[in-house]
Amino acid sequence: MSRRKNNVGTLFTPTVLAASVVFLLILFCTVCAGLLAPYDPEAIDLSSAFSGPSPEHLFGADNIGRDVLSRLLYGGRTSITNALLVVLVSVLGGVPLGLLCGYYGGWLDSLVMRVWDVILSIPALLFGFILVAMLGRGSAASVLALGIAYIPMISRLARNLTSVEKTKTYVTAAKSFGFSDARIIFRQILPNCTSTLFAELTVDIGYAIITLASLSYLGLGVQPPTSDWGMMLQEGLVNLRQMPFLVVAPGIAIVLTIVSLNIVSDGIQAYLDPEQRKLPSFRRYEKKKHK
Amino acid sequence: MRYLRYILKRLCVFIPLFLIVSLIVFFALRFSGVDPITVMLGERQATPEVMAALRAQYYLDDPLISQYLRWIGNAVTGDFGVDYINHQSVSTLIAQRLPITLGLVILSIVIGTILSVALGVLSSVREGRPTDRTISVAVLILVSVPPFLLAIITLLLLSVFAPSVGFIGAINSVSDYWARIPLPAFVLSLNMVAIVTRVTRSSMIIQLKSQYTSTALAKGLPAKMVIWKHAFRNALIPVLTIVSIFAGTSISGAVLVESVFSLPGLGGLLTQAIKTNNYPIVQSALLVLLLVFLVIGLVTDLIYAAVDPRIRKSGKGITA
Image (cartoon, rainbow over all chains, first blue to last red; front, side):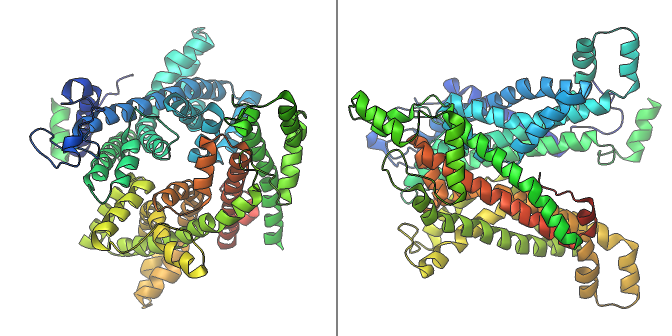
């Protein structure tokens, strides 16, 4: 990513900083689930079923005595990894297509954008249903389905950014050096779009977590024995009266992850928009100038 | 007259869009790896003759395009054929469940619009004061909570505070319907409330700060009239835009909320059919849901145009 000179204003306002710390903490805990989890998430221990928090089971145990903390960590690993994969699929498919459409324009551009118009007129979850019905159920299929469902949004954004960037002087300069189109698109234009794309992608990770959880909740996403937060919600709902915490725990995990992602994304967008950018006090600005 | 022409123009976009969407639904399912015959037979053994008879019954040997034309042609007249497994009429299945989904979606749009306009206007009038702050924080939290999680939280609260409220069972009468629909509809509307409140608030603040508002107040008009008749009318356009976008997405939320509240709606039918690869139900239920979605988009566009004359003249809608 090309580093923007950041003399005035900062991306890392206290709120954004706090949110990033929370998200990174969640990411760390779930990625290292194998090291941190005290139990095997699938280990059944009927003697401790529905036991409340105790030194052995910090968050208690569920209806068949599986450790809730371990399940939360492993479930989070599935949820977050799958969400990242969804975004990866949509970036790999959407960004190059958007760049090409934006740079060359013409019939390719009009064709692709009309197709996206139609697909975007279908709500993402319903489009996900169509693709899941087509590709089959399961983790890989639902990731692929959502990844494809997100391609139109990403590629449209990349296309709009590119069509603005390509009129700028540096592109003309690059052309006059005789750079190839590929080099201009991927080495010159793409780096200038990354920060905006990144802001969009952070939100998309949140949406992907929600939609994947919805699909698993409905039984169309990950299949047992693998489990994610959506699956935990569904299992918890069955035992709602005995142990509400089984629903509360994955619920809080999802909300915390998404709130932190949304705040980070809002922060990036506010930073990219000069009108919204949080400026330091005038005195600090003057001080910096004189350094 | 001009409005009539606008309606016609929008219909000219609507019909091809619907046909393209139906093409996507149909062909996506036909390219799935599962052979319809294995779905129909299930665990049973079959002779080639039985398989041939089944293929003939469902016209599976015809070219895909003529299968599509037969399906969409019948669908327009309200006949969706019979399903692969229980050989029930898909139209009946859908007709039984559509009122629930439709009621849920429409009621949630109505509740959502009223609630968010009230909250947004209140928040803008009290800008910066505790009321505004409280609403803003509540809204920020609501935005981040997926609708089905909100539904689960509602169930949780009910199980603690009102354990006698039941959610299981069939809906047999109109009074059952009205007893069971409003709460899920309210829950479904919350996500929309969160976003529309934000838009209403910022749109109203711009209007309240403009000079015509000061003039109206200086003339001695009562504040209520200035807020609702002057500022709100002008603030309405961006609000309607966002309402029409969210009206559509509440359909996918409805599928999830139905499942949490165990309402026998289209969502349950659809997910069950996807799990069993029962394609006649999948494609027809999807088609109906998408039709509802497109019609809601059309209706909001028409309302939008009725409010804002500029849209009528340009002939463009907001949704597609």
